[in-house]
Length: 346
Image 1 (cartoon, rainbow, N blue to C red):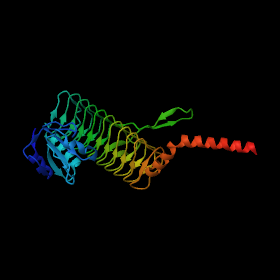
Image 2: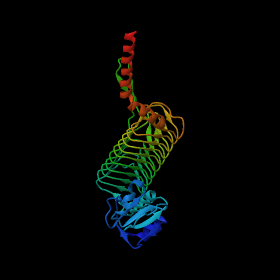
Image 3: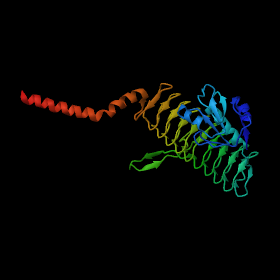
Image 4: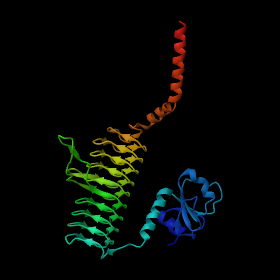
């Protein structure tokens, strides 16, 4: 499907510099784009590629100053990155929409199926499940008993949703994710043999949540593990039982959040972060990659780094000293030797 520069500029309310009739039918990175493709420029590190790109159209920020001749048609917008994301959403919406229930899906009689749904081959839908309008269930999705899947949710191939969990409107769950498996609950008996504690709660994903591939979210022991509206979890995350993740919080890949921790809204977690159980993290906290959080973070909008994590500026100062430790150790040993020599001459 082709779009002209004028169509794109009208949609984004942008200003055209160049040929308004040039067309594109694909998107690419600015350094890799070819004729017929659209790219964007938002990071100053890539400014040089604007003058060499083969892209037909490039989105740039309104305040960007063009210093040389550019072959591409430019569209100036308030925020090039955000505008590019909106175009990708438009292209996604233009794709054919699948619908219908495959004869090779198995749906229990007590399940309630809404309108305009897509249920692919080899999907299982359990007893008393509610699948609302416009839901899409791709091959090998497993929906256990008494699950509710709300409007326009999309569950990609191989997603497993255990009993009594709730999937919110517009939720997207990627392949291999497991929602509602048992929390890690065991208690040792008098012989130090671990006995399983039944996990009687569920998982609630609120509206507009996105869960990455092979992420697991454990059901609560009692009550609910809750991922609040707008939160985004990357691939390969582990969310423990009774965790609450606040609205619009984003968590990058390979992060683990232990049980009963409460994370505020608008937080950001870098990849491979680790969070201890039974702690609270304030709103707006940003956690650097590979950080370990053993205690509460009470100050909103804090930026932390390290294991154990603490204020990022203090961590960076400490790291400068840490890198100098071998030299400092050598100097201390030299001073010790000098001191011994002085003592031996007394």
